[in-house]
Length: 357
Image (cartoon, rainbow, N blue to C red; front, side, top):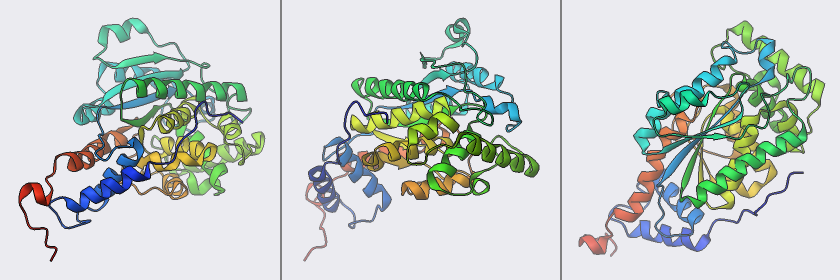
């Protein structure tokens, strides 16, 4: 089993209680901001500070290709992955727009793209985003016929994610949003979801990039074949990642664990990011309180993963894009929750009666 380089600590209970007491002193009826109060209080526990912050924030988009696309499980070819990485770097994708809206930086990681990223194009069109070249291998194997990767490669991907999480924490980021890019990665995520939750494959499989009903049926058959061929061990999440996962999913798993170990909050995006999150929680359950679910995807397996993670999504906009789009859209909510604790006046400060007789 892959071992954590640094242990994950429990949330700071003293900071949680102090933040809760401060909320009760602010100029509002106690509890009237609902989930926003709970988000701010949990941020306080994560950071060990009565008044937390959700800035600066970053979106980390892990990119990797999947050999299982040979089985016709996606409506798009794998060449789209490298093309979208260039789009991310040029600032033209949905994730760039939504990250700018939240004032968040974008970090793109080539952890397993099938082709080399043309750096001359990146340099010519870069809009200020950072590209990390951390390639473990050129895409995964076709999991319908063989393991997606070796255990060593899965552990390398976990270590890449860990390294990036550690470095971003050193740079002062307080919140990291999980993003991904990889044609075929809803197939890998559905396989992970089925193995780690015990749910039948058809219950966790959706349209992904836009498959027809027949395409979804075929996708389910491919996943069932992959699980039967590789026999991933549900008690060993690293084995699951190696046999039916993806490089970008394993990278996000390592990133999630590193953020929690360094007391950085993690905003989980949709189905693929949640597959990484459940792998992280199965590796180390102490990571769970550090996670915030941004939204509920239309992918059917996402609801199952959210229930398994015991996370309540902030919104449901019928999204299924990925990239970290939902997580980026949720960042202003966390920022607002933190700013309420910092900037809202208490009854005493405002000279307002608190209604206590």
